[in-house]
Image (cartoon, rainbow, N blue to C red; front, side, top):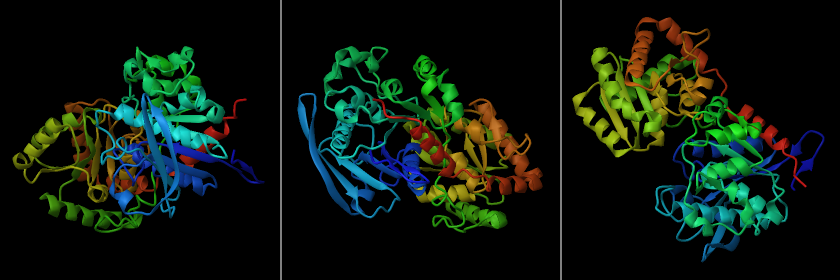
Length: 487
């Protein structure tokens, strides 16, 4: 164990294992969280590191790396070699390690391949093998989402790893319980050998389910907001009973945001920097920039959506909800969408560009710089999600003085207060429906047009709310400290 006891602090070594980490690779909020939490844990005096697959991304080729380990493992009847490289300069504020397996992890995309099951099992095997060979064991292995969900089982029960890792505490964080990584028992031979009477720790509904296995085997299970933890006991894509059974070791911790990256005073992506004293002229300048780029009217309230165009985010409702809102409120608001996802939704939004020219536009794809400009230049951010474990977008919006228009669910429920309530600074809807979205748009237009003093006060208030990682990082450290090594 690396634990060093001083008069002030017990220093822990934490290994975060994840499929994503911004800026190396990101598909959603998972990448943002793993790209920030370790940095803030290090700033609190601990040693946090990240291990992830070595995808072939720009970040890989733009930075310098050193080889730190080479090894091999069996994936069924196949023996594969792996290597581990480390980013040399610690530019992210933590050590970043990449695991490379030729033919498995050397891809441009993170997910979406037919052999994803084999890819991520191989990754987890390599991680366990490598960490098991360290001279000093880490104090905690913190696994994120189902792509790393087999590590708690492997560390505790696989013959190859249990002697070295069986007493190392594991924490499993669920960023999205909808995706569980399950696969058939016909692929059981990909797993390392274990006592077969432990097969139930892998099984859920007659399939091997990495997320279910992690919930059973990890020493502690967390989700990315308290309300989402409560919701999982009632709606968890089939795992409801398991969450209820294991609730004693489950805890919800709200995500933070990297306030150094998301800072309107210093953000290099936006047209004009601003703070709470200059929020009105600052946002007006950024809004004019967006209006010029996308053919919109800067005098009207700008309502945006940023994110994945999938049913989970209720993006399938956007075409009808926006169309209805434009007709119902006689074009008194503009709409702008940034995102990608299901082809049918992309097609519908693309088709709306000409139909509602001057009132609506969309950028189909991923654009980090544009997302920053949207937060800075928008008046309202729309998040009508059917499922939202935590949500980071509403936290970014608050930081930039953009009023979040959200469904009252998950992390949105925990972080947004409706302006109709005392001290409120957002707009909340109870259901993900076209009618609820259109009604909320009407409230936004009325707030912008007829309640200017209240609107200005809300913007000033929301920008002062602290959603940085400091508090969340401390909560995770408390979780780690509660896990005493088992003898």
